[in-house]
Image 1 (cartoon, rainbow, N blue to C red):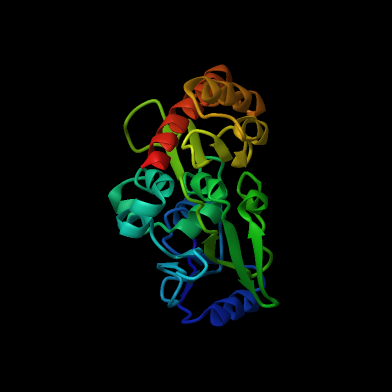
Image 2 (image 1 turned 90 degrees about the vertical axis):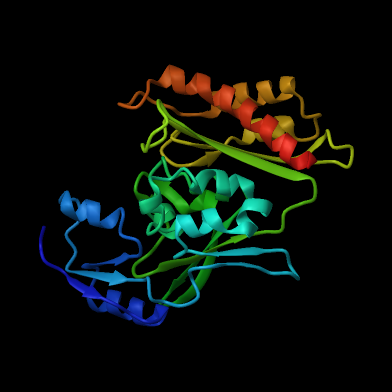
Length: 291
């Protein structure tokens, strides 16, 4: 592994200045669980690593009591999100995802921002945040901007960050009453491994506690990037949420997927499991909405 300079900025502006001064030869690092592995494997060879861990204010959640918006600092570790009572009680779909990322040791250092910026199709953290209509808050030398997470992922390993920009936080809009969500990481075994599929379902109900007013069905490892199965969502919206309608939504979502054969699973099985898991997570989301 080649030598590199380790830099520790104390502010976002200082980090951006360090990055620009190295003319693209530096790499930001938070937890380092992805970046350091790539350096050891020879996939990255930066001259400098710019640590973001000591920048104050981007490592905690904040719920705006007036607007109902949730702000999740991008440098917040998966373990901190997992143990947050706010996330556990109000955003169980996100808790479902982060509690199964890697091991406890990895979750203690790996960050939600790093999980998104790494932009792999199997990023567990991306699916619930897309289902929650999250936006990425990005800061750079020219100021800041917001982008829907549905447009943040450009391809495997590619996201919409330009130059020295930094993902600083994820903003979740207010959750409608009578809303429930659930996420499942599906693999061949109960062990620390990448998912064969990731499926998240979020449902909002009418006052009758049966009719769907809003549906989000999000899939990971079913296409080059995490995505919403919009045809399946449209089918559910305005219909009673039953096992039959959820099964049909799952069938539609399976048709929207672009699964492929890989070392972790063959395409036909993955497509079949999309339908199964959409129904299963839909039932759990319905139960949580009724609570």
